[in-house]
Length: 322
Image (cartoon, rainbow, N blue to C red; front, side, top):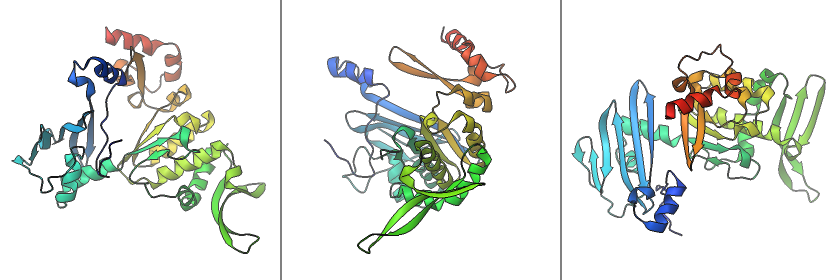
């Protein structure tokens, strides 16, 4: 297995079927190329960042545009920064280290580079299906975080949020010192229920998976800095239909962009058409359609969930693909 410095990335492809095809015939080099292109606005400036990699273990293309003007670019081992050629002092730099990462270290007074790097570095991916298995968060923000310390540090805030849920138990997660039979002290994390007519304490491991997932999701969300981005995969696993609306209300209060994959159509009732994307899988490829684009006359007052279940959006997508 090949290893790279911590600052480097792994090559990625857009579609594995293309990669498998290339392994057989090696006819089309584009089958081992993958790219990600981001469009975002920070402090009223518009940014466009492209990162393209090859499975031959090099970055084939990368650029940053600010208000439609190239700020830096690398392509074919040529580097351009502020309209001037750029050369590396360290000639052993891996071909899989993004130019943005290099500039963030060398150009520490460049506010544009630092702003963009900080923003992209904040991207946090949460795989809810793995919360109880470990390795469920991919993020530089939480690389050295103890999940239990995270839960206890935001326990009071999450407790106040649970009050908004109305149908959800109100509880805290606290850290206690337990004395073992040998006289040694051991830290123990407990679930403390503070409902109106009942109080009690249980070890954290004994509460339901749904409560654990909800506490973890909210604690991560509360830890995110403003203007950051969180991706939540399989969010339905942690969100009971009756609390989806309350959870979305919490998201609206945070200045954090959230991208969630959901299979539960109930959430459509509480989202704007421009916030909903529909996925369509055809012959090994997934395409994504913004609801407000494929159905421009739709309004929030429409019953979006009912329209979706009636297959109206499928018809609109098929019409667009003709």
